[in-house]
Image (cartoon, rainbow, N blue to C red; front, side, top):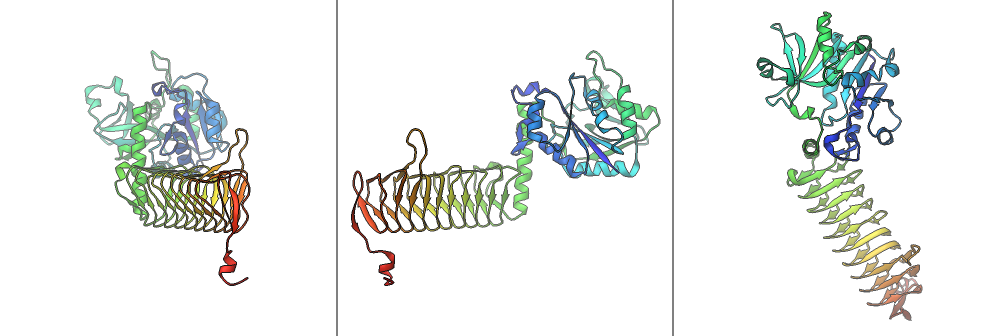
Length: 457
């Protein structure tokens, strides 16, 4: 069965009180609209039509070119919104899946079940329902004594007997395409707003003697629509809990899942321990046997195996294996710490590579630099990389020793095996195997090179 999808994303979201279109608010680390688009793709829907309105340009920029876009210029209800997709989809599928863009907690597995049931029975329309004690303002699914669906009755007009029904309409439908496109224009106008609503399709099908299929779920967390910031927080908590459960099933230890915040896009290796109040965000990948946190933020960062990140912030950085950071370290964009690097408390690295085995003392800043292997960077060392107009690079050779409180005024290079005395201000290059100190630093004497100590020279 060829299935197309219509995603309704034209709502203004006025209760969000935001300049950002509602469907672009992030849930689980990504705009909520992307959850819905991915669900449609997961069930094999093609093509996918996004019905947009408010902030259409912004929505298209986020979602990209993998879907078709149609505009609902007037907000005349969900039936009218779905009708806008008819020209783009007519005669292109056997069935049409209709989704809301503000239900990011709905699982792809549930939608696949809905589509499969519809494909097997081929009714005019198959609806998704949920059994719940809290109505959440949803319409009731009314059945006859034989269990056949006879109507969807909205809560605002329901009688006491109907209000007592616990089966609720989720607002997700799979329809026979030819039937849908011929019936959408005939949906009756609802007064006083003069709008057209999709649930009325159920009553139309029943009146025509058409079958109405139902897939009922029990997990209320799947059908949490988002219309306010409170709803946003509720859905965020649901997705965060699911992500935590997935990680633990994959062999990750979360000391306290309730205070661990991991985006669904993050991947973590087994036997890694995540401590409380840690935020793992974006396209972050963490290797095996790491210890992350507590009180750490790791965003769009690749962390190797056997690393420790204690109470630190990492942004768009790379850590090779066996790296130690913190507490209170900060890796900014472009930081790359090689295997075995140690970065002490209150250290900061930006757009710089620290080669394997280098030790960076506390209260130091290394920016726009290339640091060789096995370098010692003393506490309070600063690369002075900005002259007020441009950034300049610092180069430190393998095995160099930089004394505490050193200022390296870029552009400048410190050679292999060189030593810079504490408190120096280095404004000129220091040659290999040279001792330099002072303000400004001056070369004082040659040092025994590594090659000489090894007896190779």
